[in-house]
Length: 291
Image 1 (cartoon, one colour):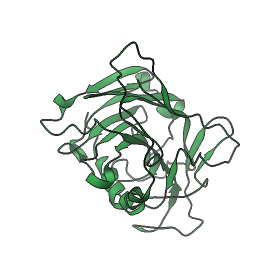
Image 2: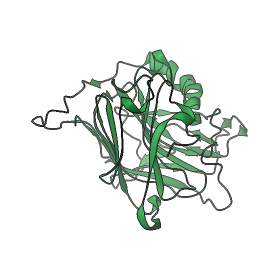
Image 3: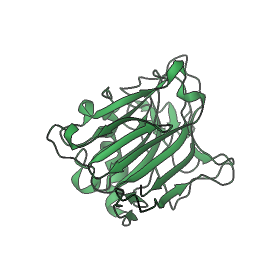
C-alpha cells in the first residue's frame, strides 16, 4: 500500500526545515558519520553506533549531544502544530522514556501559516550530530491515539543541504495516522518516486489491536541496495533498486534520524471533537548498530 499524502510533510520540511534546518545544516558541524559496515559478513559482530535509552531526571531535556530540536510550523503540509524548543514538548519522564507531547495550547502566542497556532508539539533530529550508512535502526515506542495524530520515526540523507529533497532520499521507518489505529506505514522517497509515488507498504496488527495500546518495536535493516522493514521482529517488506522503476536508488549514503509528533495535516486530517489532549509519543529507546 502506497502511503497517501504523507509526502506533503516532506515538502514542508524543506520549506520549513530549509528555513529552520537547511540553512542551519550548512552551518552545522560535520556529522559524526559511521562508515558503511560490511553487514554481509556474518563473522563480524554488530557494533552499537548510536544509543539513547532516555535515562535522566523527569522533566529534563533530551541529550543535546545527540539531538537538536527543530522549531516552527509546517505550512506546505498544513499541519496545525508549532514545534517548540527546549523541554516544553519533549522531555524525559524519569522512567527511561522520552515523551513528545502534543497539546492544544498556545501560551506564547506562536503564529502558524493559518494564524494563531492552536497546538504545540516537538520534532528532534540528529543532523550534524550522528549519521550512518547501513545497519539496523530501531526504536521502541508507544504512539498517541486519536483523529489528527501523526507520529513518525524516519531518516533523511545527510546531503539534503546540497542536493535537496527528494534527491537526498528519505526512509520512513514508521508513520501512523490516527484514523488508522491498527496500522503503520514504511516508505521510501527519492528522485522519481517521491510524494504520492513513494514506495512502501503497511503493517496492520491482528485482531483489531491498536498501536496506542502498548509499546512496539519499529526497525529497518539497511544494506547496500536493500531496505527491510519490521514491526516487533515481523518483516513486512523489503525494497531494492528493482522497485524504483529505473530511477536513482538514493540510499547508499549516510542518513540522519528524526522523531516527531505532528498534529493535523493533509494526510491525517485535523483533530476533531473526539480527539483528547494532551497526546503523547512515548519513546523507550532509539538504537542503531552496524548490522
